[in-house]
Image (cartoon, rainbow, N blue to C red):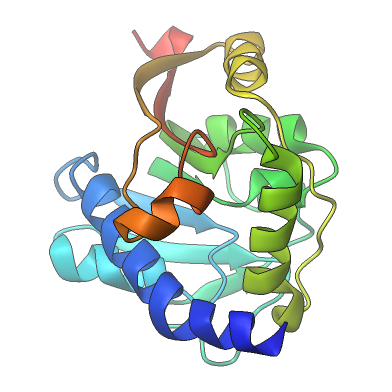
Length: 202
């Protein structure tokens, strides 16, 4: 599997960061204070900051990497160590499927931010489970990231958002994270990017 991991690091990861940064940057409010929950190496946050130098981004992660490109605070993966409404936006990018209790962490993100952006996987389509497991292992196993493979269908994500009184402002599935040929295998209906706001913020 090492050649696959090298391919991911050299080609897939940089493109993924670039594409997601562009999509998410367009959603951030002017001068916003952003919390990147499960920020990893901080590459995505750094890319967003380059596109949106007006925003302030800090990170949280269970595993704080010495080489992280943004300030990162360690947390337990469940309780966000910040007060209510401290942030304009909370990012949960490919994080919730790594947790045993995604609802709990999403509820925490809702508590601390006025907008929540979720990027995750959708367990929809042919061979979705095995494909997602392979992608997850290649991208994360070498970093010691927990891999519970806690995926959901798009319908189940929508149910979770509704249960937490999070209104879907925008939802995208076709993200273009991979070159067109690779996208036929690893893109399909396997991704979701949602911009959410609490119902009580209307």
